[in-house]
Length: 254
Image (cartoon, rainbow, N blue to C red; front, side, top):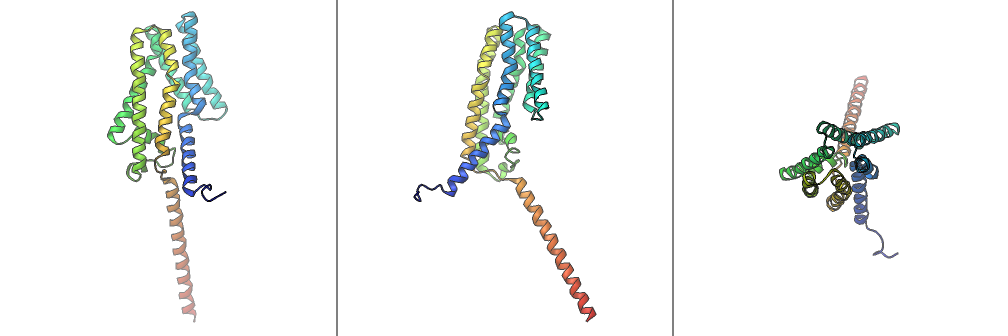
């Protein structure tokens, strides 16, 4: 292998940064299992409703499968935040649909949440505190250090928040007209079709922006280093004090 073929330290650190970014995004957004837990209740609802047009059976089945996924997570002692968010979303949808008697209202809370989230991404990006940075900062162990100490990462988080906001706005622009004009099954199948692709696109763009950004500042490692340095200073001071005391005692004895 020639010197040109050997990977440089810079290439290795870049690969490590990309790997860390991929792992963090996978953890933050739930990975494949999180996507399944997001899609399955709605898919079950629209499938049953398409066959028999029974709102109650469709709603109960969707809520039941969401609860089962939470129980499975708990039994496996796994992270339940994605499954719990799915249960709450399904529960709100069931309540809305049961109250109005309109099966389309099963989807309304999720649609409103998507619209609100899109606006939150855009507003926080404009305000200079991008939501995606608030979400991913703890995952990368940098907390809010990117705001003042790492402008390159703040820029990447801002771009990512704009990407999420615009993608979710585009999704809302498709779904809300269908809520008024289409029937329940049409809206349901379109919504299922739009669950994963926009999400994957937003995650991919986030990965692209962060992979090109400076590495995160590990504030936890910094705090640990400061604690160790403080302990070393105290130990050194204690040793110096002991040595001074011992030397003084020897002088008095002599």
